[in-house]
Image 1 (cartoon, rainbow, N blue to C red):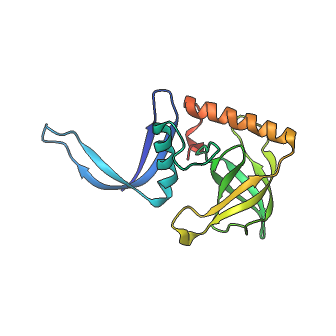
Image 2 (cartoon, rainbow, N blue to C red; image 1 turned 30 degrees about the vertical axis):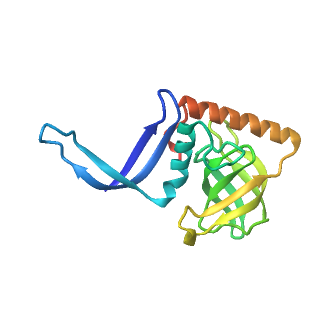
Image 3 (cartoon, helix red, strand yellow; image 1 turned 120 degrees about the horizontal axis):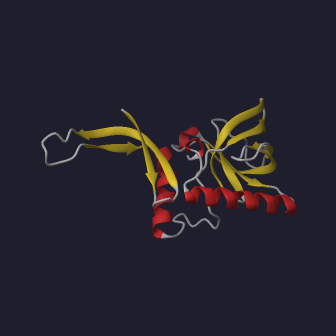
Length: 179
């Protein structure tokens, strides 16, 4: 059966939502062992596990220089077939990962509209595709983009990411944007 695991990393701290399949179950009706189950996580959850490991160890396990928040924010970008609406997998002050089965070629410049909780209008951003993941890679397909921002835009976006990070660690973000 499909399963959702809501994990809070510390009291009042960040939440991570994992998806998987129940692979084993114990009824727990003999009085000694409690009921429970084992949930198998798919390869698409790997980046969340890396985030959790990094958080628990007090650092970034994947040696990235920038923080990476696992947030599912609505994003619209210009594609060959017209505007495409999808979601981010993660975001930081330098860029984000856009989930899509049809990533644009690397070095493509994109215009993005990024929805941010608490902001009435989406942020209008310009970015370049720096890497792609296709279905055959056995990971979430999509594209990583790096922002092209003027100094004032960069400062504004940095504040936005700081606010998202504070809300994430406080556990106050809505469930639907926690990836």
